[in-house]
Image 1: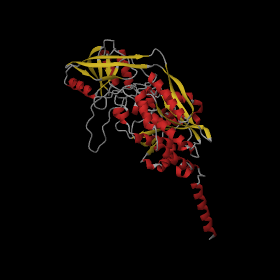
Image 2: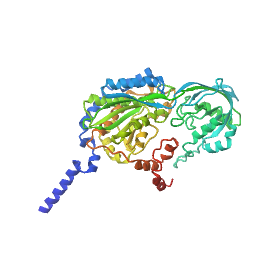
Image 3: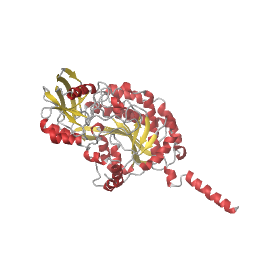
Image 4: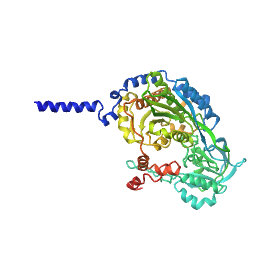
Length: 520
């Protein structure tokens, strides 16, 4: 009997240790219902969903400010707007953290006309940070370039490109088998397209039709703009053409009918570096103010439309998250720093500048939570670090009233979470269900009418709940990874080659052991 009582006592003690968080793993994985954050999260949820200003802020940003190309007057106006919004809701330490882009760029005009075999106007727009034709434009025969063989094209055909209009064409994929794997395009070196453009520039090609990475435009009668490399500029004019016009040209060429175009592109580069700035405001922590949770989206946009879904939605979600926390009356234990980045569209330049400016305090950064995937509802969190996934999964289980959301350890270098990953910090990307984003993305239809107010309120609230929970849980969500561990993870996820090609790999030969293990 005494022995049974002793065993019962031991069992109850172990249960108590597990449920009260006296073991490391139980503490780190405790959900809000057990870690003491639930009352605050409940109040934040109510504040976020009732009386949200996210949608009206998005209307202001879209209609009253409009396009916000980094380094432009529109971007400068948006920086002032962002600071005014932060101050009005009571954030502290509101400021513009300045940085410089190597060259500013101003879009001029772009036009194209088919001269033969038929005569008709074509719809084109210039990609970002590309040059101009002569003032009178150029007439040139169209020459196709195989996007699956850029290296061979440069080696064998560049000498013939002078004065030609180069049409980048993706190879046709074979039809998919009913139950088999989907056919994939051949993989290219990460810098193959950029090297092709440099070769076209050197060969004095008249222009390039190829969009971003040689892709054809998505959607009906729309074009897409964008950069062609991290902080890169090209003197050769590079154009996005509507899919309908490009496909007609391709059909003529497939019938061996020569195609001749007139192209006129007029853009302007600045003579030197141009100032830009990230907008920063804070809710200071009550217990561990030195520890920082970054929450943000990017304030800059492209200029064919209003930049509503890329990334006006991320901007107003960030501001909406701050507003919900402030209205709730609860204070986080750690500092929440809200950041509206600029320069994202030119290669994550603003967030890279942030991690450089704050390099001495990156060890005190707990996480970065970023939204930049269009107009849809948040459906997943890609956490970057696998060791924080179990805790986030527990958190999502307690906020399931907002719909099903999942978590994984994915990383993204297509948005501002990437530089935080490079700095060893969990870069948490809020993935959205935005099927129409492929049309609005960088296009002339990226406008305010594409967004619904209820989704803006919901996403703002989810961002507020996520950031406050990370900032207020008893234990720190995770510790920054050492460079060796980050490099190994990025090699295992096959991110290293593209980062090296873009010139933002900071790890030297670190991670080479992982490359050997994966057989790369």
